[in-house]
Image (cartoon, rainbow, N blue to C red; front, side):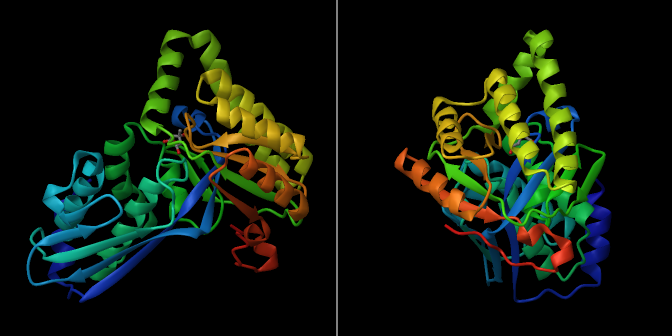
Length: 340
Ligand SMILES: C[C@@](O)(CCO)CC(=O)[O-]
């Protein structure tokens, strides 16, 4: 990316605002985690109510950040936040004002390291805030390219799915480096239950575990990756035809394949069993696995509530119920029907 040229050109003709906001949201991968890294299709959804806000205020001196992990000068940020620190430096270069004094506050409702895209959502919010501060138009392509600066450092070999969904207000159909398009579908009664195991997921570790399996046991791992891709394609068709029971079956099959790849845990397996025992149409882990969240498809809101209660009794630290009405363009609705 040619940061400098664009930055200089843009900054020369732009007056800075005094303060600016940027927002983004959590994401849930429905189909295709891990296989998306290998070029297979994936489907993910934004959760509007679980959001991140980045707020920048210009100050007289210094470059400070305040977030849940760190409060102090940007250049003293700890190594676990290296991706964010490098991204901020890149943004200041791109926008042509490396020494700009500011205070950046990040407020996040996304539990960290639970497969809900916390790091990508933070990056998307802060990129939007900086572009807003400099009053520079930001294309979606450039937003995703910049988010990838942080995601590469934090996660190693990201597919781009997290940032694409964190910056979208509709579900996404994504094939790495090829297709990134919004999809809408009509599911009026079913709901998705999301249950947090309370255990930190380990995206980098899970991605390298799958990679090791692909290298060490290709005869086992590659067919699983291919099947996960085929499942995502079938799921897109099931969404287009409102075939709820097929969606549930495809979720169960995904869970089996992800478990065979080694990224499920005993808690996630248990949550899947409990959800199915309470009439879920299907259940699977979401995101990288090795901790994080499980999702279950319920036929209606009453079933979703029963599943949610049972999962909390089994130890889920948080549950959410997500309806799909806001993903149906034909209704014209944009409500977030997320219930905590
Ligand atoms: C495991 C993975 O597929 C999803 C992580 O949320 C990794 C990626 O897409 O970059």
